[in-house]
Length: 322
Image 1 (spheres, one colour):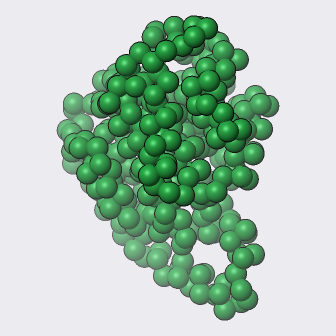
Image 2 (cartoon, rainbow, N blue to C red):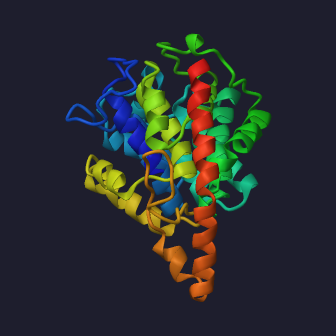
Image 3 (cartoon, rainbow, N blue to C red):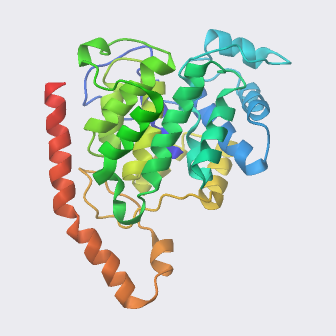
């Protein structure tokens, strides 16, 4: 779920000062976490502690009443209420906070039910629920390819399943979404999936999201949550962004990373992914039975480099015509 948090922090600076410059400054003192991070951490904490999603989201938002960028109007009222009730929202807030459930559950039906449950306390409109479930499905499917970093070679299959599940059209022209601030699930999640279809690594995906000049932090969070499951995140990048978070959030991240049943563990720092390098999964290597098993995994990983490079070149080229 750190991918959602990184996407949020990177996009936070550009939410009200949008940019179309792909090479924007990645991180500065002007960046910070927003409500997207607070709600994502709240969902993870609820899973860890076995708490009700709505109660935990409400408690965490009350703990941080004035995040960077504030809370949306109706959600702000929900946060301020002593007895918050669903208000039939189909806003993209349902999709930006859902990522932890895709890492937590091993059964897809249980995962989709939990994804809906994270939306229901506030975003109980069918479109809000569908947006949350679709993002969770993309992450869940990507995580199923975690060995040998296979997910980047199955992006089209992952996205096709999401399209069939949701009915979203992800072939929109760029002009229809460029510099368009759309806070709805149905206006945000399809764009996030389109970006994933063209991206070549985690940072590339987030840069594409933010430089659309749209709802930068939330689109960044949604794209980042999916991109993490596909490409992984460099350990140095993860550590840099965790420092932006207060201690209680870092504690939740630490516990979640070590206790979640579904864990994305990229194999090696040197698997080619654009300019992106992922964490070494020493846990996986320790589980191998002898040198032959180690050599088998390493040889299979190396044999995929050419395919990955070709696929990434094709994806990079595809956005020239978008």
